[in-house]
View 1 (cartoon, one colour):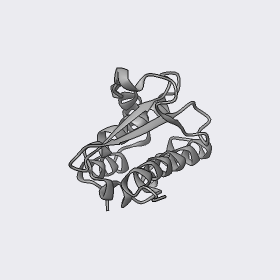
View 2 (cartoon, one colour):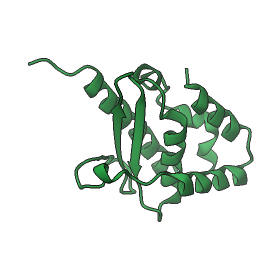
View 3 (cartoon, helix red, strand yellow):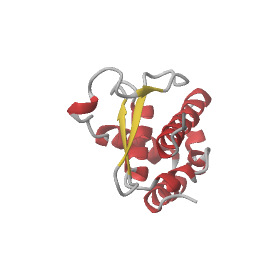
View 4 (spheres, one colour):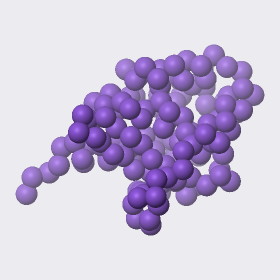
Amino acid sequence: MLPARLAQLVELFASSPKDIKVQALIEYSDRLPDLPDRLAEPGMLEQVHECQTPFFVTTEIDGDGVVQLYFDVPREAPTMRGYAGLLADGLSGSTVDEILDVPDLFYLDMGLVDVVSQLRLRGMAAIIATIKNQLRSVASPTST
């Protein structure tokens, strides 16, 4: 099950023609928020090495269990930066459990296979996996 905002975005993309999907990704690329200064230092975000684009992400969980996502993706990579913007819009404000319940390949329901390469699709899978791994490690720390 998808968080409500992400479900809206998936439905919108799924029902859009190919050229609109491309344009929407570019628009999300432009709307990706800048990193807060406290996260701009090297090492504050985790690199998703499976992406051919230098793609960095971190998650924060507030006291109420609400997640905020932060991304650093070069403007020269509008497709992956747009995907980051889409995730920031669709998942930030969700709970840990809501994000962990997102199907790993949810983006396929958006019809992105029509507009991005298989290599980028694998990167998208790695990004959602990285986000979930970060949330799992914070939500259930290992005991020593």
